[in-house]
Structures are given as structure tokens and as C-alpha cells.
Length: 471
Image (cartoon, rainbow, N blue to C red; front, side, top):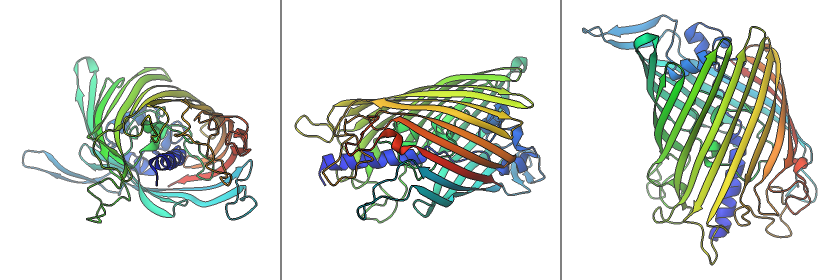
């Protein structure tokens, strides 16, 4: 396969994966309720959004408990073992129905596909979520995905955490996180891994482009980060990530590694990660502002050696989250802006490379407002936008007259914008019924005939009904 064709197909696949990963896995699991003896509302507004207490529980390593435990103490009275009386296991089931506004082409013949898709289930997850040992806890998720009909590792966050008591009733929480998706360890719901939409259909059409930190490499990299939180307000975290490809094997050893040039997008060295945030509390209100980012230098691989020039993705993002948590009324407003600068050191060549420009950029915006009454009735209104450089090789149009289009860009632009409206009903705190509508005003660079084959942006609108149960 020509390099230009490979990079084109590769970025189409990445765009599809980013669309699937835009539906984050739940971090609200009953394991924590059983472990602490507290109902879901102690840590959440409505799951999976965390309140301040929930954020501190996460920063503390998921170890707060209120259960009888199997314990062992050394001769020096050091705690050697603390096993919960109940295993911290829980499960999640999602069953959904998705309706596309306009059917997709039927590649088996002249016609079109069905517009409606039943996912029974869309997803089933098992969680180990809670205390492992003194100061050590975990959030580990295994997921069955109906699109691939496979069971695999989903989001994972293993933590060691401790707290220092400082003068004047101040505190310092410190810890380390071993995780497999940048921002999965974050405390706020304004960053990508656990940001809105908290659930989304896998049967919709996803755009071509997404930034690297926006779930694109989730579960394909692993990192170790260290963090501190001063006085439950000022938070800082730094860390490094390496490639940890799932489902990739070395053709010589037939084992999981070492990675070689047959694997695509392998990190050169380590990718640094940074997070800074400040949260202010007053009464029932809280406000967080912060920034986060990562810098990934990637070997293209896919048939080229893992050496020499790299493609560099530098992501810098800002975020905020406001919450009001009342007895009956709950409201939150959050958003993020991610700017990505891309340098195609390995893929650009003036006389015919895989991309048209030596440098490209992407900017993603997301804002959402949530309201709930008595944690039973509520909804969300959200805006999303991704814009960037015009690059007809990176974001290609139809390859030939027989190309069905849909996931192409006649203009070579990644620009995609739209709105999401969602209504929710929770008959119980661990059961949610959702009805979500997604409307695109632009898709892959255009509003009408964006793919060059006659499809409009709004043709990819979708209605999504979901039953979401955690137990």
C-alpha cells in the first residue's frame, strides 16, 4: 500500500475510533457504595458526574471504607494487610437503540442500509473498583463491545495515595496513578475521558479528525503520573506515557512485543503529560479552572522502521467546571478547549508525501450544561466543534466514482460542529433512561454535500435511546 493511502486510511480509522471512544466508560460503580456504606449521591450529582467529595475519594486512591476487613499488623504495628469483607466487584449493562436521520449506502448492492440499530447489549462491563491494600486502590474495567464482539481491557487507574496533615488545618494529598488513558485519572468531568457525552451510540457516523489527547490513544498507551492536591483545592500532576498496544504482536516472537515497524503510531521515547487545576468551594457551589496537555512524538510504523523522523502532536488544553448541588436542584456547567499543533516530520515530503502540509492544527471546543431535579429528572444541552487546517491528503475526498463517501471530505477540511440534547429519567439512583439527539451543522468541512457524493452534515444526525444499569 502506498504511504499516502496508508496515512489516509489510518486517519479515517483513528477518526472512527475517536468517535467510539467519545462515549466514556462509567466511573460511577456500586463497588464504591458498598465499600463506603454511602449511597451514590455522596460522591455524585447524577452518575457518572462527581461532586467534590467524590473527587477527593478518587484523589485518595479509592480507599475510604466502612466495612469489616481482614487485617494483619506487624510487630512494629505497621498495617500489612487490609482486605475488604466484600470483593469490590460491580457490573454495568447498556442496551440501546439508534436511529440515523438518513441511511448509509449499502456496499453489497444498490440500495441503503437500515436506519435503525438495536444494540442488545451495546456494552457490558465488569469492574474491580475499590481498595486493594492500605493506601492502594483501583478502578479497572473489562468490557464486552458488541461492535467488535470482543472482551478487552477498558479504562484502568491503579493508585497509591496518602494524606499529610499540615498546619492551620490544611492538608496535602499525594499519590501516583498507573493508567492507560490520559485524563482517565482526572478528578473533574471537564476533561475527555469522563466528559460529556457520558454515553453515546457506536452505530453513528464519526468525523475524520480528533486530537491525540481526546481518547484517540486510549488503552493503546500506559503511563505513570504523580500528583498532589493542596487543601482540597490546588491540584498538580505530571507523568509520562509509553505505547502499550492492545492486540499487536511481534511477527518474530508472536508475543505482545517488542513493538516493531509493523505496528502503527508508536511513541518515540516517552510522552509527557501535565495537569494543573484549582477548585474553589463556597456553600453549595464549586468552581474549577485548569489546564492539561500532552506531547506525543510518534513513529508512523505500518511498514516503516521505528527510527528516524517522527510526527509530533502537541496538545494544550484549558477546562472549567461549575457545580451547584442543592437538596432538590443540581446544576453544572463545564467546558474544554483543546488545541493541537501537528508537525509531520515523518509523513510530509515536498515531492509527494502522505500529507499536504508540513504542519497542521486542530482545535476542539466542548461546552455542556446539566440540570437535574431531585436526581430523578434532568437533561443536558451541549455544543461541540472541531476545526483545523485544510489538508486534502490527510482528510481526503472520495477515491473514485464508486466511493460511497460518507467518511470523506470534499474540501479537505476536518471542520465538524453541532449540538447534543439529552433528556434523562432515573427511577432509581443506579438506573438511567436516556434519550439523546445529536445534530450536525457541519461535518468534515461542509454543511451540504460535504463528502462530494451528496451527503449533508445533518444527514448524520442521530436519535439515541439508552437503558443504563449499574449494579
